[in-house]
Image 1 (cartoon, rainbow, N blue to C red):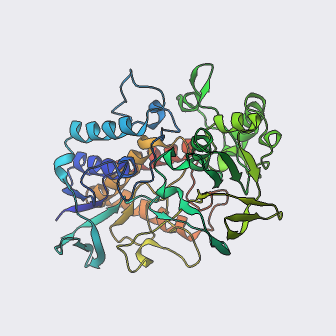
Image 2 (image 1 turned 180 degrees about the vertical axis):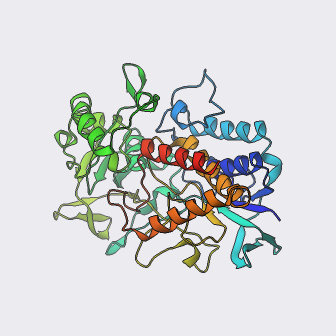
Image 3 (image 1 turned 120 degrees about the horizontal axis):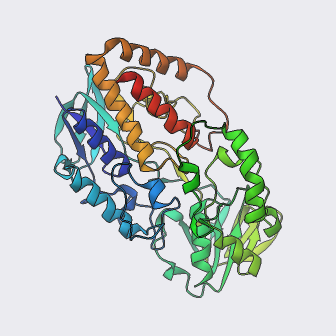
Length: 425
């Protein structure tokens, strides 16, 4: 039989390439008419907006065996990124393996494999499944008391700064998306407020005219633990960028390498210039008035919630095969990939972490293919790896893994993936 990949974004394309290279029959389904996943601007599931650019440089984002063109900017925009993914798929012969305009409606276990029911009503049995449907599809909308009489949007619905023309705008949220939208709004809106809850570290895109993240990706014989790296790099950032609290923002309570930093120094510049005013978290709505946690009130026309996303797998009615434990925001998976049961169900791309890039996602899918291959060709190695999965999933969850528990430190994560691939090969 064949293996199924759900989704044709970067992680799905990586899975197709890994399985094809391993000689494993594989096909993918993609619910849209084109590949690209989140980078398919305008698609219903895409969270990309007109001003979206990479927040990691092209060299650290690109697949290791398919660099982005040298004449492209260091941080390409979404149109170039989509073209890159199309070129990647064409170069490695992946496009013919994708069935477009086809969604998975249901996925149920069938013997040792899985049966998929598709949006056209057809069904098919597979040896196993790699889920690569992404985790930026289901908007997380906080419950805010009261009624707002203006326009209330989630960042998922935001596509262009045109909506801000002449409006009084409030952006809530301090991730990279929230910061981008604040900067977009400043150039079009009558006034801009920014509601923030917690603090974060700010990293510039360029240092000495070069992408700031490239130095972290140079080959290293020894990797410092994340905490030690943070102790070294945080003072440098505070010197180069400035402490966030000097701009009125909360001081971050986490270390630099405990979650994705903000890669946007423009928003700090605008704060310093007085182009945007900070506000506390939203407490309630009263018509066109927003009441904040400190009691302050402001009338606004648009509230845009950059408040993140839920991790969902809508085609799975039973989440037990993914080891999703009650009350958790994400399934408990070894290396963010493997459930403890040997059930031929794997997840690719379910991670957060600046610096992992698509090369890191390719390592994920190379490891999946290596494990599947080793079960037949090197059963002892596969059994030892399986024992490690069960043990890892049974140990207490690590702290410092972001809000959803899926954050990884890119240096140690890539190293661990490479070690496991070598052990199975």
